Image 1 (cartoon, rainbow, N blue to C red):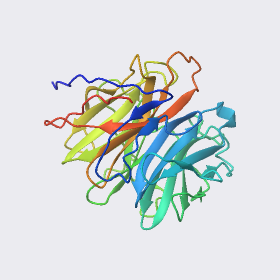
Image 2 (image 1 turned 30 degrees about the horizontal axis):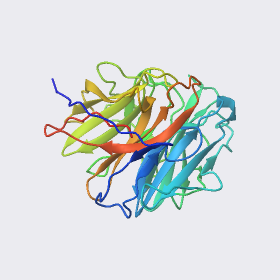
Image 3 (image 1 turned 135 degrees about the vertical axis):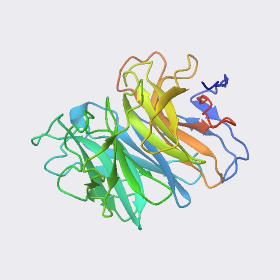
Image 4 (image 1 turned 120 degrees about the vertical axis):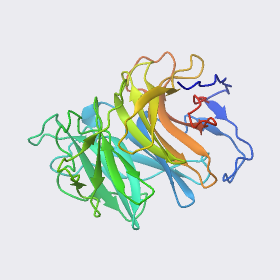
Length: 320
C-alpha cells in the first residue's frame, strides 16, 4: 500500500539530544533532551497556546494514588517549568482516583481539560470521562459539571482516553475509547455530547485492525489522520499505528506503524499527541520506557519531530 522509509538514530549522554539547530519558530538553537521532564509520567498531551508550549501528563504511579495531573510550560521546547499547584486534582463525588489521559483545548477564551477517572457511581466499565475548565492553560482546572460527560460503554468502547479534535469548520468533536473508539460532537458549552442526526449518541470509527487505546486525530492538507496505540501499555512492544481517510468518520484502514521501539534508544513508546508549530513543523509528544526497566509504570515523556512523505504518509518517528 504505502512504502515507509527507514531511518536512523543518534545518541547523547544522560538523555538523548534532539539537535535541530535553526528550526523555524524556535527561540533557541539549544537542543532539547529526552526525557523532557523529570519523573514517571505517561499519556502526554502536548500543544501550543499563544507563544507557549504546554505538556499535560498522567502521573505514572499506582492507580489508587493517581489523584492529580501535572503540567509544564516552555517558551522553546527546551526549558520546561512545572506548574504549581497541580493543574487538576480530584475533588468531585465521582472522580476519586485513577486519573489518566488528559486532553486540553481552548474555546472562546476558556481552557477545557478532559480526563479519564475511576467512576464508582453506577457505571458500566468503572470509568468515566470528565471535563474541567479554567481561565488560563496553567489552571488550576475545576470540574465544569458534577458528572462524567461519558459514563458508560457506547458501541462497546470504554469511557476512557479522550481527545478533542477541532475540524476546519469549527466543529468540536470528542473522540474516546478503549478496544473500540467513538466520535461525537461536543455542545457549544463543552458540557455534553450532541446526538447525531440519526439519534445515535456517537459514531464508531474503530480502524479495521489493531486498535487498542490512546486515539489521536490530526487533519493535514484535507486528510484525516487517525492514530492509536497498540499492545500493552507497560510492555516494550507498545507502539503507535495510524490510518488515513478523507472523512472524519472514516473508514480508517490501518497503514502501519509510525512509532515503535528502538533497541538502542527506548522501548514501549505510545499514547501520544501531535501539534503543529506556527511554521508548519509537526512534533509528537509521547511516553516511553527505559530499556531494561521492566516496571510497567516507569514511563517518561519525550518529544520528537514528525515528517510526512510526498504521498501524505507518515515517516517512522526517529526517537532521540
